[in-house]
Image (tube, rainbow, N blue to C red; front, top):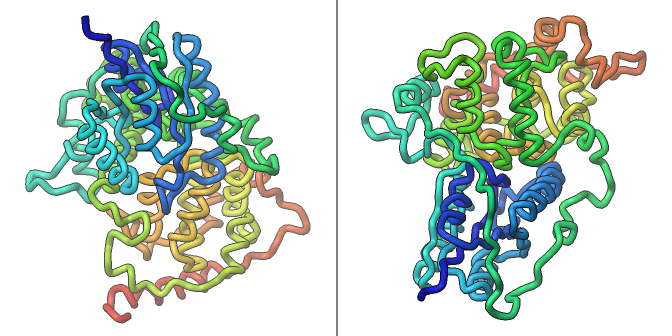
Length: 461
């Protein structure tokens, strides 16, 4: 009688048991070996930043406990990933390796090599969609091309059948037994050294609950208290009007299908295409997440170069003093400084404020969006390559469906409109007597930015 199949389940940005296609397929087949491989160098030049590593440490602890409770331990190894998978396959006599797909350019290249190598060696290598409603290769214009404008992309998504309903977590997982000596050292989470040597994460610890349970709690709270007013409250940084699910979605602690269908259930199971008001506005934000991944997949150069090639001519300023003031929240514009200080303390920033601080960097200071993208990458707990790239190229006017560069946010009027009582700036920036003077005059900076834009339109180099 042939031995029951054993599957290595390779966890990546899918740190959950619920609605996890790779895990579900493996568990239905037989015994499993859950594995996490730490190989940040394989994601170069966009290795996880400091805030992401802090979150990952917490999330791995939650995943490990959940797997233990379900019946099998999490195996942790260092990379290279292919070598680790090969070793574990030999150690447990595995017949299959399963994972959920990711869409970052470096990861796609790495995974393609791994899948071919494992297949050539006689293993069945399977990958699944566990992080998107619809995969980038499934959505195209009538001409078969990728979308570069959100509205028709969103209409295309709504015209499709609803995303499949989320699958439940397996009740019981069957652990595979090793059949040979260990192929490598099984590590503890602490051994990965994800936490900062100097503990700067105190406010982050009190602000967040990483892990699958924390994600489900945030979703439940948002559905009960936030989704009905999201359309108006989402622009108020002084209110708790957003779901704050972005880091949980990034690390795959909850699936977008689970969120999508929870919103639909909140309005009586209505088809997404017929939902209106605040719930529709929130579903559209999930659509923007899909759009970001669509763009990254089809235009893999965009994390490091503008989608609109003419913007490569833009005469960005070399201003290390201004950049440092922006990073530290010392620009003299309270709404900008409040956002940057909130980011540094909590690893997160309200989306409206993200747009304001990005506009200030690329337009008032005329510092390249790449500097902003790198800073956000290191300091955001929801640092996601697709969303980060889309957001910064949107602000700089050089991406798909971007805000034109000549639309320049006035940080003062933005604060008056979206933080009218100054509650947000008082909380994060303060307004004491020693508050710094503005490092630039906005009116003058606006003129200089518009003058610089002429280089793009004129074709000069």
